[in-house]
Length: 184
Image (cartoon, rainbow, N blue to C red; front, top):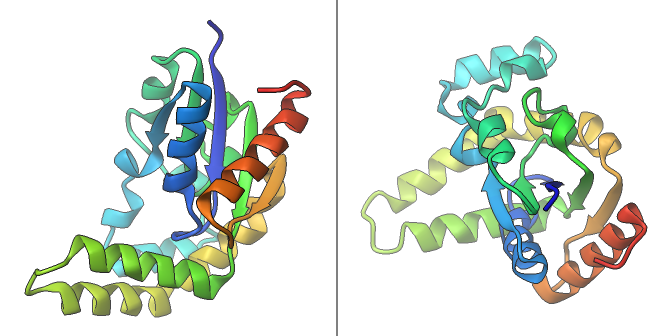
């Protein structure tokens, strides 16, 4: 079977993970998450800010092992990545790129909700939320603007994710049908 890589890009909270699982289940594929390989989120805030000040050079967005993980798979590979075709190690492997557009307030609410679920009962939960919001104000907002201006234009299609997951999945499958010019 031939490998077909479908990239899903968008801001945190846009619904990449949920949609990736839905597409993989519908098409019998597998999900690969950029977040499992990337290193930028482990950088100290000053380094992230310096990267943004330098124009956010994508060659610094390394993800050791990501390319090899994608190449090791056959069939449908759903690549959940915030930087789509801009990723220096996997951009050339992508057959279809979908940008997930989500209103900023909804994306932020989803992200905070996910943090709340992951920290339920944890004494450090308030610190975790405060840290995320501080990072959002310090540099995440700038990174999201960079993402929209540089990554979004490289996508083959855009899907609005301000709807229920089943509607977003349906709209994405329609977009993929058009990209591949076949019913998938």
